[in-house]
Image (cartoon, rainbow, N blue to C red; front, side, top):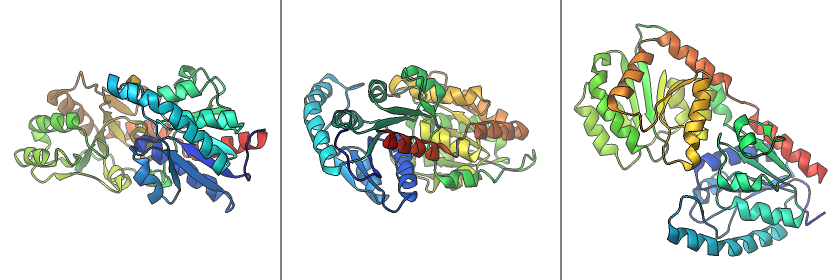
Length: 370
């Protein structure tokens, strides 16, 4: 038995992107909801989005000095290698200070040092992998943690953890609530197309969509378009729509709350990060998924293929993407509303409304066991 605190203290390590942070917050909320005596503390880095998102969600955040190694230039790799010992010492100290009774890693730079320190301190540890292809940190940590949870069954094989619990991804309840609103499959009604590329937008999707507008002109009386561009491309995309057959399209830099926009859509064009895929599935909306080609280990395409194989999406890789190809896919789905409804239902079959519960159940199990 190592350093242990009062039972009910959860430490969550990781972050960097919203795809890591938002599921972690959902887990933290479920953890504390089960008992008023429970506590959660997050551990992240100065440069990650967690620095803003976690305090806003009402949880304390500790910072350590650590950076990524994979996909970095030589200079960054060398600098981050030198940071590792310092990050580990900080993590080891934090475990002693906070005295967690269980530690969860969700991927991201800080998860490695924190889970290793927790292991050495004798604290039960777990990881959750949100993508079909696990990140480097989780592939390494899978060998030492007490338990593992995965969103996709394929991830368990890739991490060589056959005992991993398949939980799905924690998605906020409002997405499942929105899924009860099924769009009517009427061929003569106007359809809504939602185009989005994450909080920062996607230049690849923006440019392909502007080019596709010419080929979509015959649908001008049949579709309404909502396009989230990200801040950098807003004016360029707005100009593209003004010059097209869709001058009244709603073109904005950011959409919040995104759940309302997904629920109002008949079809989405989007990237295929784990959270995007999970949110579309929870609401039950058909999608044209365009995986981010530079995603580590090509995990976005693997996420997208899992939905495609279930019948919930059409996948167009960046290599295959052209304005004509995108317009052809949109036209085919808008022109066959019954197919779009079927695809939405197939996507929803992949949703896991009890994912957060399963993960917290697992954390409680290993907390009691150690």
